[in-house]
Length: 126
Image (cartoon, rainbow, N blue to C red):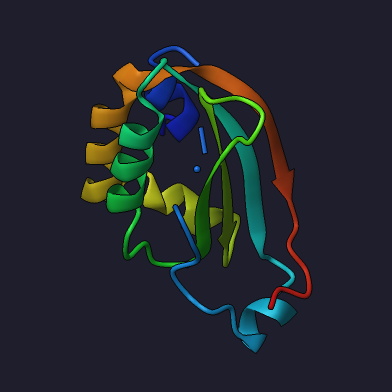
């Protein structure tokens, strides 16, 4: 399986304007919870377009607890994506969803590169 960041860059991802779901007690107690926080560099003038593509393409992903896209306040050509999942496997499975594949295809030409990327183990989500 090809990782989403490889597909999006075309040679080298993760990133909504708010939470889609409320994270319940089950997720708070789940030791297998998985998260990614990453910065994506965007072609000049394409940030809002890419945000819209990602927001549309990441709806209704099984196992997703939260997917938040944020504008980088110090770089007009960057966004941050914070995603929390029930498990690493749920994240991997999301990459095969038709809506995610479509977003990857549409967004790839707007991505100039990637900045920081962190894998995290969410705890005490509320």
